[in-house]
Length: 521
Image (cartoon, rainbow, N blue to C red; front, side, top):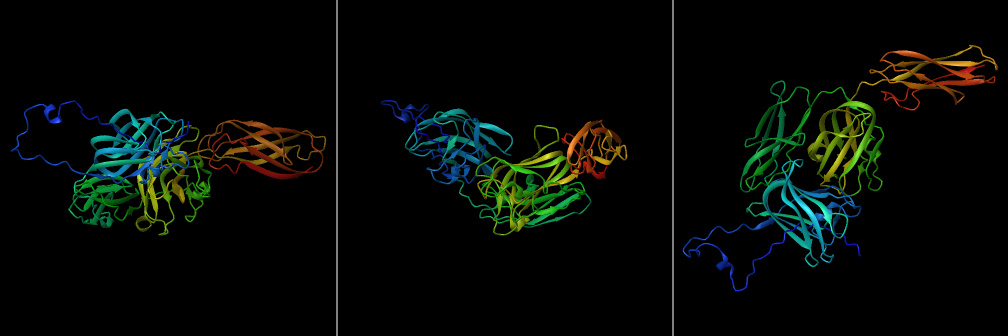
C-alpha cells in the first residue's frame, strides 16, 4: 500500500439531500403553503473565514502543524504515529461564532475515514464537546469534509482517535468559518497604558481609548498574560498585595468580537530575595533545530537561543540539582527589533527532588513577546518548590517551534542538608611501612535540613582504600568515622575523604564534599 499521509485532518459532516421521485421539496414540507403576501424573512448571513493560530499534540518531523493553515492543500500536518489520540487546535484570539469547519487532505490521496471529536473551550483548558465522535470520510477529488456548527468558542480542538489509512492524525487544511457580521476590522490597540499605586496594596491602570470603524464596546485587562476583567471604561483599579510583581496590558473589542493587539505592557515591580538559580545548570530539550541547543537558554546571553524542531508540544527543562522555592520564571528572547513580536503559548511545570511526576506551577497561557513593548521579556509569577523546572510549549506565532534565549528560574534554595568533611587524621601519627594505618574523617551537616545516612570514601594517592557508613545527621551535627587503610610503602600520599560519593543525598552544595591533605611516611 502506498503510504498516503492525510495532510490535513478534515472534519466534515456529509449532508444528505432529500430525494424523492415525483415529490418536490416544497410539497414535502409540512403545514400550509407560504403566504405570497408575507414579507420575506431575513437573509442568511454570508460566511467569512476566521483568523486563527494553531497548535497540536505532536507533529512528525517535516510535517509541522503550520502546514494546516498555509492555504496549500498539498502540504499537510501529521501527528506522531501509533500514538492515538492526537489533536490539532485553533485559537481564534477571542470567542467567535462558528458556522462550520472545513477539513482537507491532498486531493489525490486515497479514500480514508478519520474518527474525531470537535471540542471547544473559552480558556484553552476546560473543553466540552461541540460535535460527538464521528467517522468522517475523505473521498479523492475534493478530499474535503465539512462539519456544520452553531456555537461560539475561542479554542476549537479536533481530537482524532482513528485513521483507516495511516496510524496518525493527518490534515492539510483546518478552516473555520463564521457569519459575516459586516465588521471584520479590529479596534486599534489601547495606547499610553500607565500604572500607579494610589495606596499600599492597590494598583490603578489608565489608558487612552481605542478607535474602531464601528465602535469600541469594551476592554479586557490582562495580568501576567491572563484576563482578569472586562470593562467599558479606560481605568481599572484592583487590590494586589504589596511587593507582588505583576505585568499588565489591555486589549480593546468591538461588537463583532474583533479584538485589538496588546497595549504597551506595564510592570508593577515586586520584592524578592531570590536569584536566578538556572544559570549554568544542566538543561535539556525534547528537540533542537539546527545548532540552537538547549544550553543557549541559560548562558546569560540573549544573543544566543534555543529553538525546538518544528511542531508542538516541545519542552525545555532546567535541573537545579536540589529543591528551590520558586517565585517567578523569566523567559527572554533577543530584544533586538529584528526579532518581530510573537506570541508563545506555554505552561510552567515543576518536579520536586525525589518525585517522578511534574506538576503545574503556572497554567498554560499565551505570552506576548514584543521588542517594543516589553523588551521581548516575559515574567510569570509562580509559587512552588521544585528541583526541575520545565517550559512546555504548545504554539508560537513567530516560528514553527518553541524558542527561548534565556530561561531564568528566580527563587531561593529550599532547606536541604550540606555535607562537608571538616578534617582528616590518621593513626599512628608517624606510621612505618609495617604500621596498620587508620584514617578518620569528621563529617558535618552544614545545611539547614536533616541529612539521611550515607558513607565516606577514603583514598590514598588517588586510590580508594575503604569506606565507612555515616549515620543520619541533623542540621549542624557532626560525626567522625574511621577507615582501616592497611599498610603502605614509605612515600608521600594525598589523603582524601569524600562524603556521599554516590550523590544519594540532595544537598545545597554538591561541590564541597571532599577534604584533602598531603602526608609523608
